[in-house]
Amino acid sequence: RENGSQEAFQHVRSTVLPDVYQQFEEIAAFAPEISYFKGEDATGKPTHLFLHQVEAIKTLMDDAGGILADEPGTGKTLELALAALNLLDKKEVQNERPGRILVVGGKTTIDNWENELGIHIDTKDIQIANINFTGKVNASLAKRVAKIEAMMRSPQSTKQIILVNYDSFRNRQFQRMLADYPADVVIVDETHNVKSRRMSALTPEEPAESSGNTVARRVRSLYSYIRENPE
Image (cartoon, rainbow, N blue to C red; front, side, top):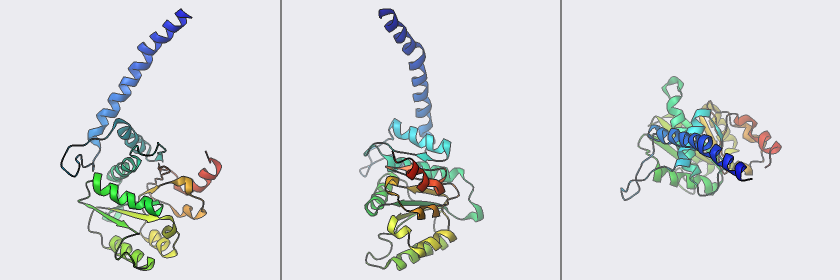
């Protein structure tokens, strides 16, 4: 037993740890390549991404999508936002139109997205539209969708982020707008709540999904994936 323990220790020391250290170094080296992170809080105090966040962003970018299902409070919203924005930079958008990111989630979830984007993301050249509060709060859904469509038709920035809740996403007017102005990256937040086949309408040119959070390579198959893999 003692010899076996020594052999296991030597294996960990000589093989496992060097691999782990190398992976840490590769992840840390990738951090400066991530754009759009403010890097400071409201008081101007410097902030930084955690190693697991850099790893998640790198993985999502390397794979052009994936499923992010970490524990609550680990910074998944920020990871997805940064991965999506940096993916857009690598993607050639035709007709010189803005790169578009569509975020679909629960009503409170997309409000949190708007808040997190304002805190952590450099948004000086990014238009953000939240279906909950676009225009007047008490405006009809039709007027709010029309306002978002006007923004997409006459862009004022190189990137646009559209935040929409599941109920509004199913609206026919919104679906028509999505067909006319397709998203390049789609993030579906809290995908464990997805039960509608209408999610197949998500057909981004560079997809993404999110459960707890997700960025999916094949968003069209999201419903089937969740149905067949409930765990």
